[in-house]
Length: 390
Image (cartoon, rainbow, N blue to C red; front, side, top):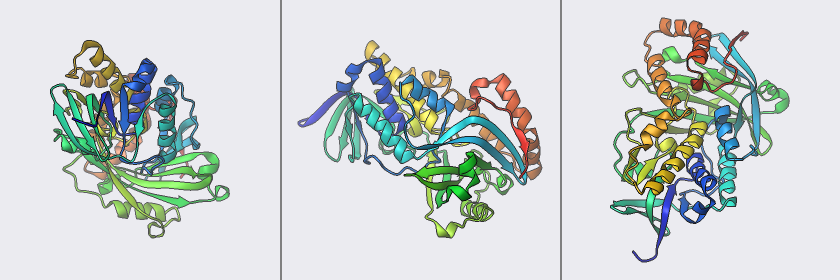
């Protein structure tokens, strides 16, 4: 293996999960800077389709890493839940932040590099070959031989496919557009108001339409899209473009006037495999929330779990990673994924409009119950929903 770079840990993917893994390793021991490498097929800043919501849970991970939030963002102070003319609003200061993933991911990668991480960008992985004592990872420019590998290369993970990883068939669907706005004429920007509109649930949409106020280099934009969980696989598929078109038209915006982008999300499966000898999954490659598609906070926390698993493996010289999945499921944040999978299958499994109507009327009571019974499952500090005008 001439011209091979040997390393203790190779992280495939320089998004939030991969970079968070590196940052947590460096926080544990700065000497990890010389013992690991990160490789990514893209070069920062790169576009990443995403609503860009960073909840308190995600900020808490950044705070523990000693990283004050610096990327350009908007504070959401009103979160409006809409269903066929009925509105509940959650108020907080803030409920969460909205940022652009290109900016956020670039900033996060820069923080890792400042702390000594080696980041190889614009270098796609082309092959992975597990061996008894390590994993051979071939990229477009070099070959790595790693004692351990963290696969964090997203929902369409090349590494998962190359390794013929079992499972991973549940994919949510998303469509997204950006519409230019003016702050003077945008109450959403003025008030920090975001919308989750569930009106299309009876039309087989297993999710919602969203409106998120956003900023791109100071320009006011509205991030609009449709999330379709597909947790109830037996139900017919919703016509996502039609839902998006109607929802935008109701707000005076037109789908044909803006570029449309779509992408899948690999959803978390409680029965799925998260590790094999010398290799673990993190972030979207491991699976994200199928209830509302929240990804950033979970990705950041996957980094904490992956880093802890790596440190433990080297300390015990045991690279089976048999304890990684239990570690993920015991984690206070990542453990919420199990609850959200159950809720997604229950709610999106309804077949009739009257079931959604009843569930909507019970929503405030359900939120209050969950806040009491399982507070760790709530992404908001104040879970009280207020009945509002449309």
